[in-house]
Every structure is written in structure tokens, then in C-alpha cells.
Amino acid sequence: MDGDLFTGVPHFFHVAEERSYRRAAQKLGLTPAAVSKAVLKLEEKLGVKLLQRTSRAVALTPEGAEFLTRCREAISSLHAGHEQLSESRRQPRGELSLSLPFILGRVVVPALPRLAARYPELSVRVTMTDRLVRLQEEQVDVGVRVGAREDSALISRLLGASRWVTVAAPSYLARRGEPSRPEELARHTCVQFVAPNGRPRDWTFADGKGGPGAGVAEVRVEGRLRIDQGELMLEAAAAGFGVCQVLDFMVGERLRDGRLKEVLQRFSAEGPKLHAVAAPERARTPNVKACFAFLADAFARA
Image (tube, rainbow, N blue to C red):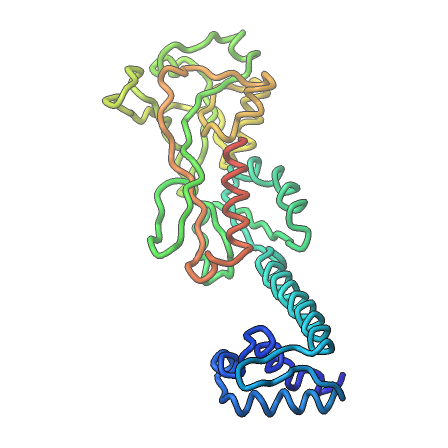
């Protein structure tokens, strides 16, 4: 490429647009003499007269008018190239690292094809774990938290609230009957979730009164089956083993297709909130912004 291809062109362009060496010089941050010298060199190089100079004004020659048209076209193309490049840099690409608790896998993973279809240059690495992931130390872009946020230094987006639902298979309820109050669970077979601390989780119920003053109580149930994986607990309940309590987003599909039925709905209590979190230095990147929006949509559809 000719290294002198653009020499003098910006000077000519501004003089032609402004019809003034002085105003062109102000835009370029040069002296009028320097601008005039650059235009003269350009004319010598091209072998044509581009500008007619008088004591009062600057006019374009026919060749100058044609050259100005070409300059405008070239500048328009350059602007378009800049915009296209800038837009491409705003598009998610490369690898996105996402950490999820096990109970959220059923919500997020089936929705990933929508993210992949929208951003074909983005790949996702999903880590499933119930331990607290240190995002910055472990090079994780986005984590999803169930419950209270542990680190206020992280950028957080609320994905939604949840509700505790108590469910059982229709076949189980046909055999054992449907409980009408939480106390009646003492006469039922319960499937319990074992928390990471190794203890079975007590079940959470509202007092059934509803409204702002409704109370919430933790009820200890006795289970013949204890499992530390929410999905397997639901599979056991769907197979007719007994009653279990989970968060609503875990069980929506099984309720819709009839494999499970909600019981004690009047006593259903509010569950923990769900947040997507990211380190401040990553929260503004295209990958993390796209992931936050994707997760919000996935939980809205759950």
C-alpha cells in the first residue's frame, strides 16, 4: 500500500468542507499555512488543481469536486467499518464460565440452546457444585446463588423469588391420602433433602392465614429416605415413594405433566431469592451481561 496515499487528504477535505483554510486549520489543530502547504503537495502529487483560492473564498475545481465526493464515500466507509468493529467487540464471544448449584441444573441447562443460538461465537463451561464458589479466585464469570448473598462486593442481579412446594405422586396420594395440614405429615412417608452440612433440612410452612402478617414455621419431619441431590429426591417422589418439599422452580415440569401433585398449597411459604453474581471487573463485559439476561429469562420461563 502506498504510504503517502492519505498525505494531504484530511487537509483538503476540511478545507473543501469548510471553504476556509482558517476554519480547516482550527479543526486540524494546525496553522493555515501548514494546511495550505499540505494541500499544495497533494495537488502536485495528483497533478491537478483541486481548489481555487481567492482573497475572499475557496472554491472547488471540477476535479476538486469529484475528489471531494470520493473522499466523502471513503470516510463513510471508514465510519461504517468503525461501527461494525465496535459492534462486533460488544458481541459475546469466547468462553463463559458459569457456576450453578445442583438444584438449578434442570432450569438452566435445557435453556442453554437459546443462548448458543443467539451468540454463535460464545461457548459455555458449566460447573455444578453446592459449595460456595469464590468467583475471582476460581476464574468463574457468573455464579448463581440461592438465598442470602454472602459477598456484598459482587455485582448482583435478582433472578426471581421462589416458593416452597410440597409434592407427592398421584399414586402415593391414592394409597395414603392427601394431608390437609403440616402436622399430618407425621403419618406420611417423607423424602428428605440432606444439606451440605450433612443434616436433613426441616420443612418450611406458612401458617395458612395469608397476608402480610402470615407466620412461617420450620417443621421437622421424619423420612424413610434421605438424599443429598434434589433431582433424585424428586425422582423418588415421582416414583411413589412419598412426600417431599422442594422449591417451585425445581418441579414445574413434573406438576404440569401430572407426575407430581402439590399438597398443602394453602401452607406454602416464600422461599429464598435467586441472584446471579459476578465480580465487578467482569460484570460489564458482553459475556456476563448476556449471561445475566439469559438467566433472568430462563427463570422467568421455569
